[in-house]
Image (cartoon, rainbow, N blue to C red; front, side, top):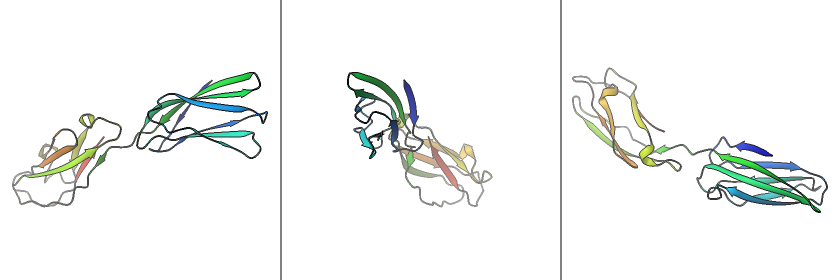
Length: 171
């Protein structure tokens, strides 16, 4: 049989619990796919030897899919079950951009860094929005750069002054 277990938080483990009888059942595990993203499978047995819990944790900041195969054996009988494990991705990150100020009718370039453990940096979508579009609208926000280093260029509307919060997003 095949079951799918999905984590909802980056770095969270998948847990497979099997209740069994008789108490002399033996278990063997293997990762049949995705072994590059998971650590060694750790079994834990309850005191009565009627339940085994297999905990599979992702390596470092890895995400993706893996398949855990569990073979239960007692005497000459064995049964194999597979579990698809899906580990939640880590969200992309952006360095802190400190508050900036600029003179009226000038342009400001601000460099920042983006990173992502799961996605090629060239594939990240980076954009910005302004809280005060009468001062600086979407046309006045341009993001350039490749890889991890990006620059946002802020061009306010002519002859305007005030305050705006520019929010930079990455996904």
